[in-house]
Image 1: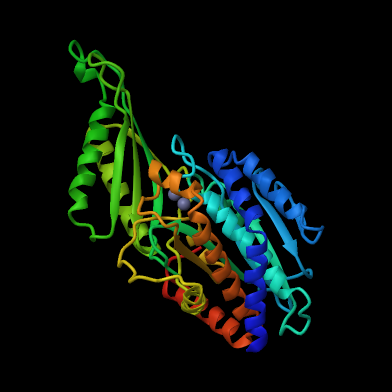
Image 2 (image 1 turned 90 degrees about the vertical axis):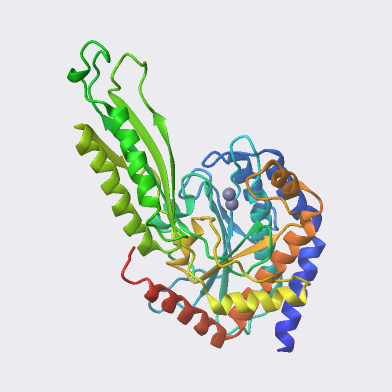
Length: 412
Ligand SMILES: [Zn+2]
Ligand SMILES: [Zn+2]
C-alpha cells in the first residue's frame, strides 16, 4: 500500500514539474485549430512532445491514419492474446477542432490530459521492476472525433488490438467518472424523380421534393411514438432548383440517436420505413446512405469509475450527482466495446457549454490548467491502482465482460 502511494506521489510531482511544457502543448494545439482529419500541426506537435523525452518513447507518426500517431514505452507485447504476459495501458489524445469555432470542445485539453497521464504513469513505474506484470504504456493519437470517428477507423486497422486498458478524459461542464453518452447514426436520403414543366405538364414529372417533404412529415409523426431519450433531427438539404420545374432531385440529412445500440437499430428500421414510404407514395427512387461510422454508447466500467473517483477526491475533485440523460456522443463508445476503459469528464472551471465560442475561450484559458492536470493525475493514479493490484485488474475485466454481455444481442 505504501508503495502504491509512493508511486501516486511520484506521478503527481512529475506532472507538476513539467506543467509549463504540458500547458504549452495544449496552447499550441488551441492556437492552431484544425478540422477532423486535417490535424497535421497537432499531430506533429504531439509527435515532437514524445520524441523529445530522452528517447524513452518509441514514436510512430502517421500511425495507420495520416494524422494519428502512436507513442509507446516499455516491453513488447500486450493485448488479450493467449500467452501474453505484458499489460499494455493505453491513453488517448484527441485534437480536432470545430468549423468556425476552434477548440469549442476542448480537444486540445484531451491531448494534454492523455500526454500528461502517460508520462506521469511512466514516471511512477520507472524503476519498479517488482510489478505483478510487466507494464507497457501506449499513447494513441486519435484524430477526427468530431466528424468521421477516427477511433473507429483505428479499431478497424487493428490499433487497439494489443491494448489491455484504455484511459481518456473529455472537458465538460462537470466532473464525472462516467456519463451515459448516446449512439449516433447519420443518414443521407436521396430522392430521384423526373423534371417537368410545373405548370404546362406537371403530370409528366415525378416530384422528388414531395418525397422529401412526405419523409420529413413521416418522421415528425414517428417522433411522437419514440421513447423520450431517442432523438431524430434533420434538414432538407436540397429541394429543387426553380418553382416552375418539378424537382427531379431532393436530399435529406438526418441524425438518429438513442442511449443504447440495440435501440438505434430499432430506430433505424423505423426511419427507413418512413423514407421508403415517401418514395413509394411519389414514385421516386430512393437511396439511403449512411456516410459515417455508427458511434456506440459508452459501456460503463464500475471498477475504473470508482477508482477514478476515489483518486480524484484526494486531489480535490468533486463529483456531483450524474444526470440521468446526457445527449453527447463519442467514438470512444466503440472503443469501450472492445477494450476495458474509462472516458471521464472534467470541468474546466467554466459554466460555458461545449460547442460554443465561450467554451473555446475557456479551453484556452490559463484557468483550465489546474483542472486539466488534476484530471491527468487522477487517470494515471487509477492506472497505478490497476497495474499494481491484480484483483482490481481482474474486476475491471469482469465489469467489461458483464457490460458487453448486457448488449450481446446487438453486435460488432
Ligand atoms: Zn464535440
Ligand atoms: Zn468532444
